[in-house]
Each structure stands twice: as C-alpha cells, then as structure tokens.
Length: 478
Image 1 (cartoon, one colour):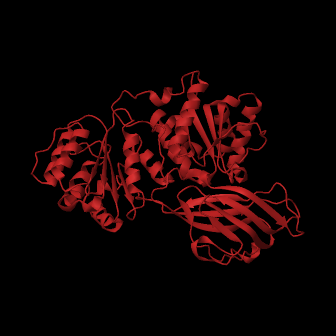
Image 2 (cartoon, one colour):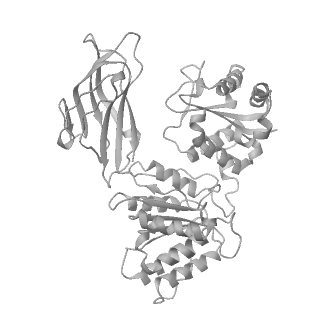
Image 3 (cartoon, helix red, strand yellow):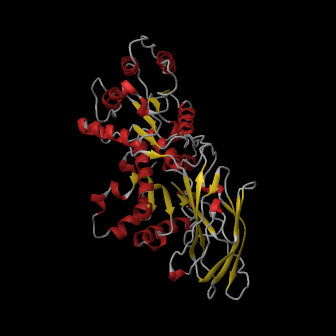
C-alpha cells in the first residue's frame, strides 16, 4: 500500500525554480497532498518540532525520495537534516527508495564512487519529471511508462511531454518553454519566440511541428504570414491540417481565420497553432490580438463559448510592436495576463568561461595552455583584453580581429581555439578566461556538451606542470 507521500523532494534553495516545476507536474499527476514539497505543506510545517517531524516523513511516509544535490546542498542546515534521514535509508539497504539527482557533478556526503545519479545540468524539469515517474513505477514492479501513460486515452494535453527530437542550435530555453506549453499543468498557452531575422526561428517552427505531431490527440498546424501572396490557398491548407472545413475563399484573411477558429471550438481536443512572422499579419493583426489570443485563454480561467483548448506560439522579428500589442490585450482582457508566457529569445551568442578548479594545497598557477573544441556553427568573436580582478590574479590577452590574439589562434578547419601560453600571476583557482562566440543560424546540435578541452597543461610558479588539473568550461547562451 502506498504511504502518505508518493514522492518527496529534497533540494537546496538555489534550485527552487527548477524543483518547483517538477513539483507542479507531479502534483498534476498525484495531487499536492501526495507530494512532499515544502510549499505544499506550509501550515503543517509551521511547528517547533519540525526538525523531528520532517525526518520521520522521509523515513516512514514516502514511497520515493528524490534528492537534488547541488553545490550549496551540503551547506544548508535543513538539507543536512534531510540528508541524514535519507542516508539512513541507504544504510538500511533501502536504497531503492532514494533517487539521486544532481547538478554540477556534486557527490552526496558518504556515498561511494559507484553511486548512480541523474545529471540534471542538461535536463529540463519536464524531462526530470518523466524520469521520476518512471523510477516510481519500476520500484513498484510496473512498466516504466505506467504513470506517464495512465490517462493518455483522455483527450487532453500530456502529463509530461514525450522525449523531444531537438536537432537545433542549443535553444534549451525555447525547448523547455515548449515542453511547458504542451503539458497539462501549463499556466500559459501562449508562447512568443522573438529574435532578429536569420537567427533560426524557422528551425524552431519545424521542431515545434515535428514534436507536436508525435503527441496523441494533439492537432497542430503552422501558418506563415509571409509564406505566399495567395492567402486563400494557404488558409485552405491550414484548415486541412487542422481537419476542419476550408473557409470560404475571397472573404478576407480575418474572416477566414475566424471561420477556422469557430470550427476548432467545436472539436474536442487540444490544438497547437504555430504562427510565423506574427507582426506581418496585416489586416489580421487586430483579429489576432483581440480574438485569437482571447480564445486561447486556458479553460481553467474561462468556461464560456469563446474558450479554445489551444496553445499558440508566435514567431516574430519585431518584439517591440508585438509586445505593445500584447500589453494592450492584457489591459483590455485581464485574463490574458497569466496566459501569455515570458517571450523566448533565439540564442545568437555563446559565452565560454574557463575555470581553474581547486588546486592542491600550496599550489598556484603561473601559466595555462589549452586547446578548446567548438561545435560546428560556433565561431569566436574578437577576444578582448581581460582582467577579472586583482585579488585572483590577472590575465593579459591582446585582442585582434577574427578571434586571434597574441599566444592564441583559431583553426576554422577543425573549429578549435589553441592558447599557447596564457600567463597568470600567482593564480589560485576560479574563472580566468572568457570567450565570446557567435552562433550561425544554420547551426545544429549545439549545446553546452559540444564544447570541450582537447588538450591542456597547467603550470605552477616553479615552472612544473600540475598533474590532474583540467580547466572546466561553462557555456551561457544569449
């Protein structure tokens, strides 16, 4: 028999935003009362003996404990208290009741090197939720898809998204936003993708549709306002993909879109509508803002005849005009405010930061040489002189055009940057190099894992190489 809690979540506050999304998805599947997440039980946890009450819940009242380790986890008092109870379960040979997850390759205190983890650095909350549900089912001797597939015969949005095929430049933010958009617990059903021309928005359109058609009961179609001058033909094809009657030709784009919308309202089932180049809607712009957006408000907020169980994603090169229009729509129709998600911007730049990890006692760095592999479609911008701070040492790099600098070179054939000798002054550990790169609109399979160090040598102040020290790379996309 199941205990009081199906799943408990142990985490440090630095990862609350990530874990909160997991908790919300799990609560959609089981109910908030069945998820041990502090925000769901604030009244119960406001007690003087919480330090004794909480470990008992982990030990005796939870089917599966999910630990989300991070750099700050071991330093948090409450995390330490929770870990003591969790580690006690592991020592009692109840390790199957504990699912270990982590950021930044952090190890749990007292665990051996053979412990297995789910590394969350490259997972979205939706993907992590899927793994948690699979583990719970496996613990109970059930097929891993049990808690994911239950209710899939219902005509509704999926509880968690299926594994997505996403062979585009690291649009991790867009991917995560799309996953939220198409799940049952989504707070918004409108997603904006903003960015300049030729930055990969059309690639995103293709990915939305490619993944959308794989979801049971989800009807999806794309309409490009710049696709053709023959709008009648485009609208007829749009209606055909949505399995609704074609609108009467020659009646104007707003009227024809309105006809399609009226037909969709009569269909029981979720719908994904992708509109490309939203700001070129022309005569339909007002209809888009005042009719379609209003109709897309979640049925949780509206239950009258104008509601539509649809998710909208709009791609635009002009976020200013679009944002102005949407802000007006939010003012005119307050219910829209919580149905429009934060716009997602297409990544066009990548910033690489190189970091020296903790050194052996008494060691300091005087020079570093390294060779960095960049993914296809990523090229370095101009490398500027850099001096992070005097306390941690200085780095003198003389910038030059096309990504070259004194002591460094870029090989376009292999897409690698080689630093022959970066001179540091008694440097201990921490960030020591920043490289700004540009992302080609046609780049594919670009993610943080595609950046790697092929060769390196770290020299101490005596001129000797420090063994076992490899600079670490972190990548941020803008």
